[in-house]
Every structure is written in structure tokens, then in C-alpha cells.
Image 1 (cartoon, rainbow, N blue to C red):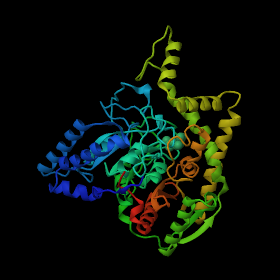
Image 2 (image 1 turned 180 degrees about the vertical axis):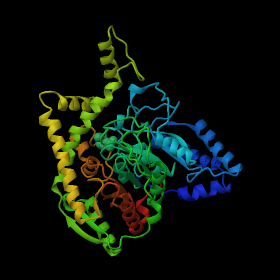
Image 3 (image 1 turned 90 degrees about the horizontal axis):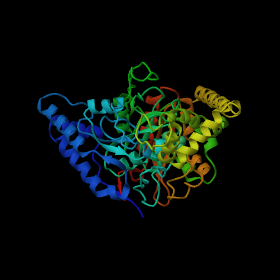
Image 4 (image 1 turned 60 degrees about the vertical axis):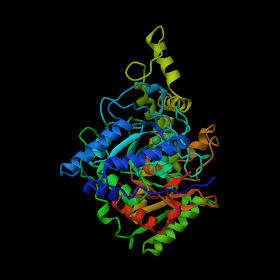
Length: 488
Ligand code: GLN
């Protein structure tokens, strides 16, 4: 099965420009997006819920602001999809888990308020691997999302619903969360742009926690400029998140097209295995950047390979603590029993899926008294080695290039029964998560089967501006056919 190019909704700036001048109503833009939902949602299953009434009310509010002569903001009328681990007041937020059944958040995540304040119109909550644990969206309690490039393949994960909604042209913008790659990996598998910002740049108030030392929120879009605009809107200090950096949102668009001339770019050789089509794309990307004036060299950073095993101790350890709040009392599902302990156990037994249980058990084990030093302590040391190795590499390079993923989108069922195979999907995305650095995936090529391949641009902390410049340059040299939107 192959995908065909789909009509684009237009850039975020172009949509907002029409809505701001009243040339096109937000309601009309929304109608286009909802029409596409009707056409494709049955095949793709991007959404846990499409919030038509709330979206219509928001679009009408934008149109009223325009009519009153005021400015609804830089994303006026832009339809957006939200990963279903972002709290939305009065709208179910499930993390694609049965354990949150019936729970209605009492507040909006800060990113949700910021999008609305900028005029964006949220159309629904997107599917994910339960509690964002996974790389294929197959761990959702509500069934998987399909990849619009090939309905027999996964869209990646955990933010697979958000990625597929953008890649199929349902929305031009979606938000995801990224703990070890959950924005970048599905972006790569779906042929779109995905950005994980520096830890602390985007508020996580209202993001349901997975691993708090790693979680970040970021955008999915079809172009680098759209992702940059969205990031400018959602970034910036938030007193409601104690890990939010007390500094203004980064300015990205102003320098986006400054080019790469003179930039020092390192190609991480440790991630270029022989006979890998994703590795080949990175080599071509490096050549394109060199042709555009960058100084490109290979660099070996073997410590980055410690990232994956360290992450799969640290992230489950943090998750085992964060998920202890789902006890049958405070949120969602309760399965009763004769005493509190039995009620807790039954609720968790029925409410959590197998991967979430596996993570809680791994994390609890790694933190237990006899094993703490051997597992959690060691993993933290490995994390420090990753951070130091990056520090050393960034003495010589402004940005680093790797594949985003070891392979293109894989068929359903091919990895889900083998956790280690699934975890390997995150090999290249995890190191920058452990370091808290920004990273972006840019669609750069198609493999012989017509499936998209992403190239990852890594930068040091707060290096978003230079990272996005390199991403824009890569995008300019990539074939247009390598990116969404597509129709399955
Ligand atoms: N695939 C990784 C995991 O399963 C990353 C998930 C994420 O970034 N949320 O933990």
C-alpha cells in the first residue's frame, strides 16, 4: 500500500493570516479539518476523542475577536490536536489507559492555554502508548493508530496519534510529549517534523508525568517553520512548573533561514551501522549541509550507546513512583475489594496494561534496597557519562547529526512481543533526553518502499535556534515527497 500526497492546509502563518484579516473564518478552517477527520479517522484511529463542540465554540470565539477588530494571535484559527496525556479541563484525559476511565481534569495544561491564547483551535485528544510507554502506539488500551503512509505499519510512539494526525493532513499542528523519543521517533516514521525542546523550555504543568527528569512537550508539524512558530508560542517561563526555566521563549523564526555557512556539524559515527538506510540518509544529509557551507566531520561518541540501558532503568524507576498515584481513590477507575489493599491491587491489575505493569515492576526492582546501587545508581553514573561526552563533543561542534530511528516504520505486531526489540527503537533519541538537550527530527528521504526516513539534529542545552536553522537547511535539500501530508 502506498500513500499519495494530500492537500495541505497551508502553513500555520498562512492560516492565521487569513483568519486574522477575516478573509477566512476560523469556523471554515475547522470545517476542513473535521471533514478530513470524517474521511480518515476510521482508517487511522488518531484520536481518543474528537471534541467537535468545544472546537466549534473556540473557533467561534476566534471569529468574534476578529469581528471586534482585535487580534486573536499568531495561531488564529489553526486546528491543533493534543496528545491525550495533556490535561484539558472538563474533557477526558486518558493517557490511553483504562485506569483513568471517567476522569475529567480540573484544569488545562499550560501549553493548552498558551495555544488557545494564541488563537489555535484544539480539535481533540490523540492516541498514545499507555502512559507514553512504547514506540508504536500498540500499547494503547484503545487500539493502535495506523501509519498514513502504510496502514499495515505503526506510526511510531508514544505520540503516534499526534504524528499520524499531522502526517495525514487532519491538522497542521499537534503536540506530543517526549521522554526518550516519543515526539521524534513517530515524526520520523510519519515523515513530519518533530521537536523536543531543552528540558525546562516548555512548561509541563498539566502533562501527566511519566519520568519527570526527562518528560518534555513539543510540536509536530509538516515544516520546520511551522514547528518553530508553535514552539515560540508554547515555550517560556511558567510559575506553575518548578522545572520551567525562568527565561523568555527562544526566538527561532528570526534566524531560521540564516543558513548553515560556517557551522561545525558532527555526524555521530556510532549510530551509522553498515547497510542501514537510515544511516545512509544521514550521510546524504551531511553532504547536503556541507554543500550549503557547513563544516562537516565524523565524530565518535561511544558513551552515547550507554544511553539506552541507562534510560530503561531511570525512566521505569521514575514511572514506578509517578504511577503510584493511581490507587483507585484519587483518579478514574476503582475496582472494589474487601479492604483497601485489595481494592488498590484489583484497580491496578485491571486498569494498567502489560507494558505499564512491566515498567512499574522494573522500576520498583531497580529502586529496591538491595539493588539500588547496582541498577539505579549505575544508571545515574551512565547518564553522567552521556552528559559529559556531549559536553566534550560540543566543544568541537555546534550541532550533531544522527538517524532519528534505526529503521523505518515497522509492521504491526513485529516488535510488540519483544520488549528489548521495541526499546531499541529509541537508541538514537534517548541520549539527548538524558542530557536534557533539544533535538529535532526532519523528514529527509524515502526508502525504496516509499517509507519516510528522519534525520535527527541535536544541539546543546538552549541551542534551539541553531538546531532549527540546521533543520531548515536540511528540509530545503530534502525531496518534498519525503514529507506529509499524505492520504493512505
Ligand atoms: N519509547 C520510549 C519508551 O517507551 C520513549 C517514550 C517516550 O518518549 N514517552 O519509554
